[in-house]
Length: 321
Ligand SMILES: Cc1cc2nc3c(=O)[nH]c(=O)nc-3n(C[C@H](O)[C@H](O)[C@H](O)COP(=O)(O)O)c2cc1C
Image 1: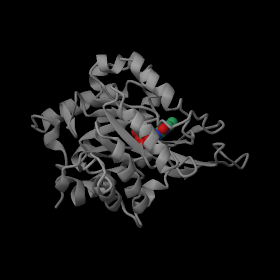
Image 2: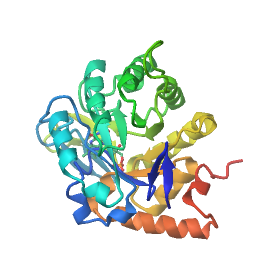
Image 3: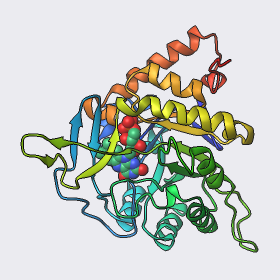
């Protein structure tokens, strides 16, 4: 069940999704850490943010709608926290730091700080938050995305860079264009860093959505609109992974973290068959914090039934004619 994600060895393909496991302090009280490969932090910004006023989350049929508004402690406090807390490390679980911003400079500032933190194994750029002004600007504009990744690559020298894309299923730019842009962005000519852009792709963030209370006629969350996650989005993401893997990522050897609506091992297995090397879980852990353990055990049994010696053998192994 071990995987290697752009040089990071993970003891399990399961990664907890950004924003759904906080800073990873409490989750290990209810979940055996052996089933986790990595935990992604809440997205961190340069300064602390309170986020949007409540209500910020609402459960829907087969889904969750949220507009948290990137409430987080800010990078300084996060850095102190990482320096003092070695819980994940102790259990062999990697910490991925999610970084958000609204300008190139703000992303660069936080990413540079994260690059220097010993406890952080990889940096994930959230360019796809649908709930804050400008949160997904970079993720839907290939030119802006290339500029951002270029600039961040100047300061992210030591660690793999994950780019978390929005679920753009149709229209222009499509997911393959964005994936290619994120991976092929290079450091500025003459810059210190000749590495390509993203080492890993994370597909995908939440889908912009809205829910209305028909009795009060008011939106069900204060921000009016938010991001949809959970089982309702799962099969949209299966296709995003399939398209990205087949049309691009397989050829260039860039691993994908599949993320969206995984609640059962069968969901995780579909992501792997579509081309994901690792599988994120978020919303499922809110209903049942121990669900990653069930998914892990199910995947293990499935791998054996498939006659595969490792989970890696099953990546992209969907039988399409
Ligand atoms: C309450 C909540 C907060 C989230 N916060 C973040 C965040 O800070 N950064 C981020 O990149 N994604 C955030 N997400 C998106 C998740 O990381 C994930 O992409 C999405 O929920 C789909 O996966 P799931 O269906 O397994 O939850 C958040 C999702 C939820 C439900």
